Each structure stands twice: as structure tokens, then as C-alpha cells.
Image 1 (tube, one colour):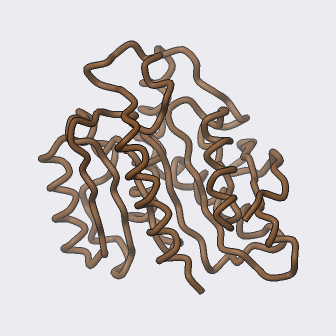
Image 2 (image 1 turned 135 degrees about the horizontal axis):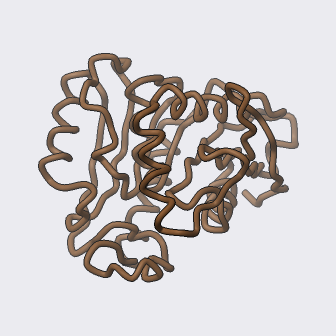
Length: 246
């Protein structure tokens, strides 16, 4: 499907102004409701990479909202801002999840969107956000984490709705998703009755889907890997097709 149009939209949560980026596929304008995908940004906010990703997912036939967690459409460009900002939301999960839920509601309210068929996906901070949302809110058909910071995800999955679906796409050399943490997460999801799948890519570090990952100048931690990027995208496409089927 080709993308019909894209635009920024404003919505709010608890008095905060949020600015997301909406992409609708052509078939959302023909009278038949299409499934939706909430895309949660990485540490940098709703920037060009997220907007391009939203367009790419919309081209598959989904309505996509790149949701704004930071607020005011803010983009973090200074590394010194990232840790404190993520820490702020990790210590206030009610606001963190509330802003994502506000994004889901904003997407579901769009004309031509089937609000009963929505998935959530995210990169890095957004990957952790997708899993945390599945754990604590669960108002989606499935969640996808792409090189998510798994340490941010809460350990208690007993509150999660049984039957939820999760896809974790991660690098074997990602220090933010170390093997013990991944195993702990898998065991917790299994105990909660979550249908999960984890794809671990060899020789792959954090941020492996972003061609500009070298800008961080931390090659031992974060690096683009084309093969893993292609494999993760193929897994994502299959998962969305599975969980959002009519």
C-alpha cells in the first residue's frame, strides 16, 4: 500500500501537550477501517528516523502514530539529556504509560482506523516502552521491541493479560539487553501466559537498525548491522500481519 498522507497531530495527557506524527495508508481513505500501529520513539524523540519508519510501516497498509512521550514534540540531541529524561519516566511509570495510552487513543480515534486492531512497537527506549505497555496496560494485540533497553521493563508480569503477544528483536552483544535479563523476561512472560518470540542476532550491538548509529561514537556499544536490520524488519512484518489480521 502506498502512503496517502502524513501530518503532525496534537493530543494531550494530564495537561501535557503531546505532538505525534500520523501516517495513513491509501486504503484508510476508501471506507474500510485499517489496523493501527503505535510507534514509540527511541531516546531522541519523534525525529526523522521515527517519521521515516512510520511511513515505512504505513506503506504496509497500517495507520501509524509515532507517539510523543517526551512532550511538546521535543527531540533530544545532547547526550547529557538522555539519561535524566529516561530516568524521569522510568521513575514515573504512570505518566510514561499514560502518555503512550493517550497516543493509542489518539490513533484509534482517527477516521478509517480500526481501534480494535492495534499493535505497539518501538526502538531502544521505545522497545522497552512497548513491552512495559504490554505488561501493565495491554490494550493492544501485540508488542514489538527492537533493540529495547530491557532493564527498563518491570519484572512483575503477573499483572499482564494472558494471551498477549510479544516479539523481541535484539542483538547478542547489546549490553542493554544482556542474556540474563532477556532470560528473566522470557521466564516472566511465560509464567504470565504471554505468547512471546525472541530473535537474537549474532555479532549485533545496540541500535542495529539505525544507519546513523555511529554518531554516538561508541562502537563497542552501538552500531548498525545491515543483515540484522533486514532480518528484524522481516520478522516485524510477519508479526504485524499475524496479530493484526482481521
